[in-house]
Figure 1 (cartoon, rainbow, N blue to C red):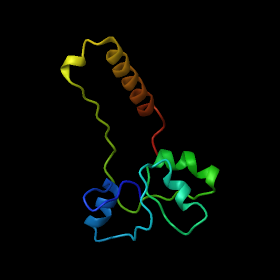
Figure 2: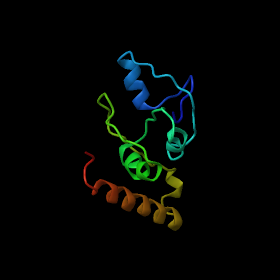
Figure 3: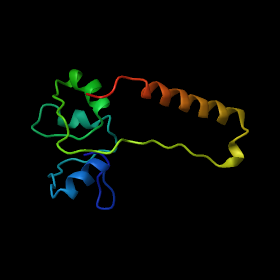
Figure 4: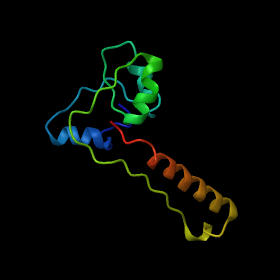
Length: 111
C-alpha cells in the first residue's frame, strides 16, 4: 500500500473498508510510483491509479485489474496565499499547472 497508516489511508482503502473488506497490508511505501516494484514477482496486489498502473505494468510484467468497487474521481487542488498572485514566477507556475491539468483532462477516458 501507499500512504497507509493508522490515521491516514487512501480513498480506495476507505471504499473497501466501508464494504467490510480489510486487505492484509504487508508493505507500506511513500509513493505510488514505487509501489509496483514491491509487488513485481510476488503474489501481492497493489492499489494505484489506473493510468499510472497501465504505464508501469508492462515494464514489470504486471497485470492491471479493475478495482472491485466504485471509486470517486481523484481531484487535485492547487491553492496559494493571495500575496503570491502578482509574482511572475508564481503566475508562470500556476499557468503550467493549468496546462498540465488540461492535457490530462483531454486524454482518452480510462477503460
